[in-house]
Image (cartoon, rainbow, N blue to C red; front, side):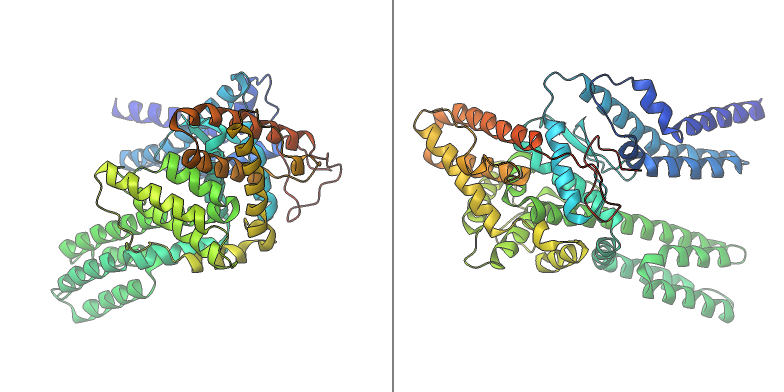
Length: 482
């Protein structure tokens, strides 16, 4: 009977994984009516899901015991979670009336992709999820943020894709993770080294010490080295071997969590660099929460806030007079008030930033094809301020704001500029308008910004002969020329 149950479980999991590695059937089953999704973008979005499903299938076919089966079963959960969220998001987006948030997010992603010389992606509506995607290359527009003001947050989502795909930024993440993990590693090595002294054979003790030394010298491979040590000791030194296995697991967990935290912080730096003050405003005023609980594998919201402010300050310092000084001061003051009001005492103005902002910007610029175009510059911010001031003047005088005069020419506006203009105007309205008038004025500015975004999309030229990879990235729905 046990054999029959094992076979049934194996067959069921094999069937599900076979379905997961055939993404064409997923898209066909949705029968999308209004959303036109380019097949190349779809395949790019799910390629890691497909690859992981193929790897798990290969491992499953070699599984001969319950222990291996359950290990593969646990690993398969991420595939099914990612697939379900992706399909549900696409179906929901296809059926939302007057859906604009994801449509605008697609264009913002396309702008970012063009700047870094990568293939673009698309966005789906989703619920808030503390787990960052490691397989699905799609940005999420999270509920309840399906509105224009939260759109800059998409730059962070796309930033995570860029960080994972870029060798330069991946190495930076690894360096940050290893630096953070070093104190924990040292304590684990010290405990294990003391246990190695009880090994009876001096030759084996020397070999074991060499494994440990190698682990210390290569933090990224430390867990593998300690596991090799555990296998070497498993017969004659069972107790020490088990201790080594436990230590290897602790090292892997510690480094994995530190890597995830570093990746989020570097993505914050990328989003601030490319989307400018608009990202800082959306993150600090809408998303980050000083009272958010500390979660494994995630930086605290206080750490993220410090990182974003530090990167914005570094960008400002590079172009004297500092163009972002006032918005930085406003956001820092607002964040500190939020911290004080929440009762959190984990963040102080003197707290150390967990990321070296100057080093992060250097690495990000080295990743860019055209860093001077990728950075949200002083001139771009001046233009955004002009548009925002024009909207502010209109609502202050009881008029309906429209498309700014100097943004009327086709091709003269980017989504990044619109979002920065809107946030600049909103911050000014909070400071200068009576509190009872701010909500109505914000709605008017939202409508004006949406009009300008629609104008940008309408004026996008049709690309008849898009260049190969490394040139302009494909836009959503755009097929690559044969």
